[in-house]
Image (tube, rainbow, N blue to C red):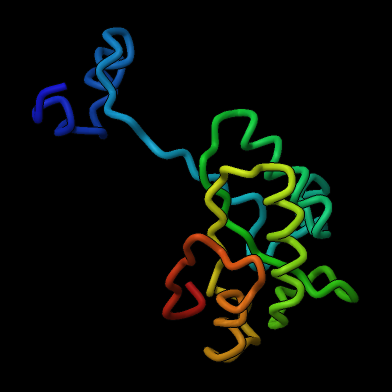
Length: 140
């Protein structure tokens, strides 16, 4: 591909359709946010909350072509809350890595509205460690 093939107006639907028909898209990374920091089954019964559910959804995204998964681990005793315990992230990461050995694990530092900055960073101390992490400077 030429350099011009990488530069295009993604807001133009006609350019997008033309590129799709001609197979002129550059390589891309598909990331899947399998659940959110404050959303859960209360809002949508299909959102994964448990570590096992998150690993299953990560696997489904992986099979569909995702190469990266964004993770919000939950408090096991209250799945409506994002955790501040690195062990909870370790469990989710381990289960995802078992099912998807080549996926990029992206743990969040967003946490939830009740977490301090230090608590939000707990995801960085998981074992296995994430391959990357989001940088959230505030609640939004």
